[in-house]
Amino acid sequence: MKDAIAGRLESANLWRRASARWLMLMGCTEYTEAQREWMIQRRAFCLAQIPPPVLPEKIDIREIARAADKTLQQMGIASPSGEAFRGSGCKLSLRQPPNTITSPEQQNNLSKA
Image 1 (cartoon, rainbow, N blue to C red):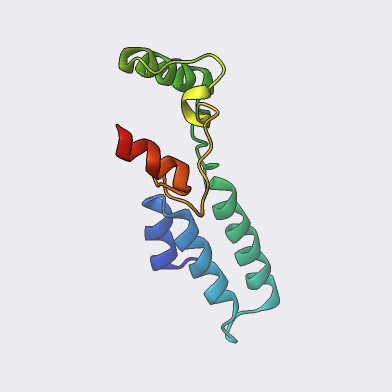
Image 2 (cartoon, rainbow, N blue to C red):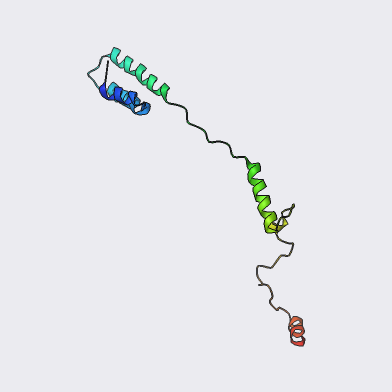
């Protein structure tokens, strides 16, 4: 059994398309059971020819960490404990903006200065 379109697809190494073509031909009513069995085998052959997908290389996280550490050192903010990103321990109140005078004593101290 031959199909010109499926043959051209196979010769061009378009295995998925050739497999789909054989599947479409199997649905036609004009073929015998023996011909359909041959198409099943040919389709299986086409599917077996599909190369496995190429997996991307794994990223080496250590190289990224080294580059980040080097950048932090060049910027002068390197800290082994990571304090540059966690704050210096000074916590501001969310309700009160910084540098606001809240008590009368603070107002008196500012007026004397």
